[in-house]
Amino acid sequence: MKSEEWVDAGVCGRELCCTKFLNNFETVSIKMAKEQNISLNPSKISGNCGRLMCCLKFEENVYLDKLKSLPKVGATVKTEDGVGEVVSIETLKERLRIKFKDGEDTFFKKYDAKDVTVLKDVEGDDKITAKDVENEEDLKELEELEKLDKTEKTEDDY
Image (cartoon, rainbow, N blue to C red; front, side, top):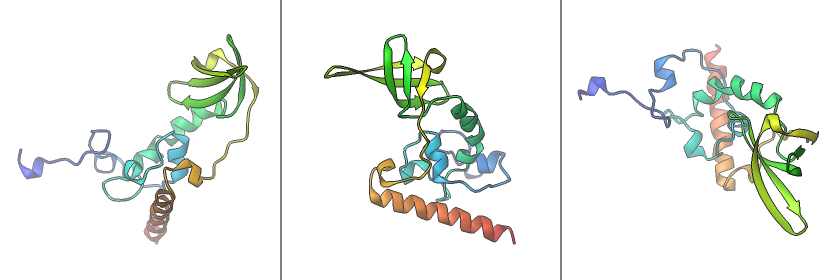
């Protein structure tokens, strides 16, 4: 392969969105990664350029639309197996992992969102905290990446 044929690839294995088709670079936030259930690890959500990955913004609308119709983590739901609590969400598949307690026993089961009834939803927590990341250093690094992105967007506006 000749060097001029080389194409940068993203973590998905495809050609980088920013070199292939994206030309309007909007601000990307770590909140977008949290909404998309992506590990808030800087090495996993940083693009080749060192900024937050453009695809987080590109895919945001799909996730936001789906999340509107899904209960939040912590919601109380009724299933064919009884009442339980949502512990995780597979947003694109619209599947929920529900935790049930039976006396001292706890068990988990997955359900399609259409097969559960929300009894009590919870308020969403958009703020990124240390509990959302593996360690405090990752949180600081993510905040710096987000600041860098916002600074560069502001400078580009002039």
